Amino acid sequence: MPKDTFYNLSDDKKRKIFDAAVQEFSTRHFSEASINQIVKAAGIPRGSFYQYFSGKEDLFFYIFEEIVKEKLEIIRQAETIDPDADAFEICIQTT
View 1 (cartoon, one colour):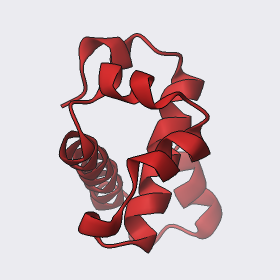
View 2 (cartoon, helix red, strand yellow):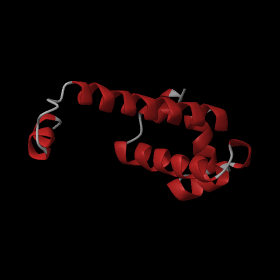
View 3 (cartoon, one colour):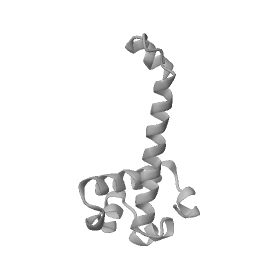
């Protein structure tokens, strides 16, 4: 899991790191994924990366966990939607 310093970052900076990591892990096998590419895409120094995560595995598991949480929330919302609702009603129900 991320170190406390990661949670102290602005939401914008956390999102940049998250997005850069998702991009890297989704285009390369884990063994080929590069911390250098992630920090470059996120616009952070490599040293800062290690203040936020203990390593590539730590970042990968954080990203994985966040994506699973997001998907579970979507499933929970879908379970509460009226199956007879039209698209407009669904948009209102899920916001």
